[in-house]
Image 1 (cartoon, helix red, strand yellow):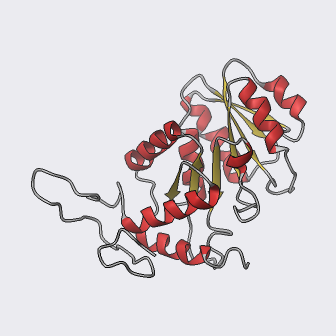
Image 2 (tube, rainbow, N blue to C red):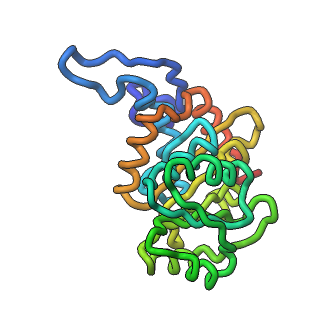
Image 3 (cartoon, helix red, strand yellow):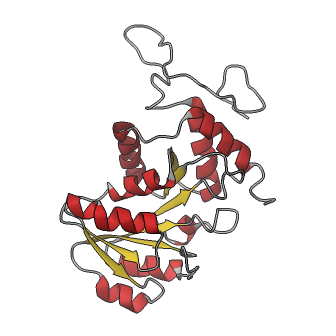
Length: 237
């Protein structure tokens, strides 16, 4: 449902609008411009946050847009460690884009926690992994990896595309950020593209929300509606 809608519909409507009428010329309502917020997107993001047990979730135009936003949490001089068996699009983003922003990238076998611990340097700010990985379906001990990361003050980001929240909730075992290419299991119908970033701490949520609005990468209302539909059958699938 959509409890905040003035007409309490049993199914979330598509707010296919770019702008919203404001209470007056001197005050803002809950929504003003769809890039900054839309009721259909809010419904989807709240639903995903509940599924992942996250402080907040954010819907993006693609899985790569979601991953790019996570990398934007870093600044020049920071380092990110990533699992050596990684989705090709993410490898391209790291090695051909992030490096030009002054971010150091280093591949490591995240299934080997000792190797990860040895690879961490004073510049390391983030460890990014997939479990299961794409394409080799390798499994990382996420709880163990979170312990290694947090012992050195490093954030852990998990791309859990291959393991949706009906099967695994990485935030509950120590991950700080979870990313999904929602195009796969959240959709289930191969008719929409999207991505999610889910965070455990409100401080990260504020930064991700700022980047989503500032960079204009949010998911459009119609696609939000399609993902809400897809979630209804995710457990059955």
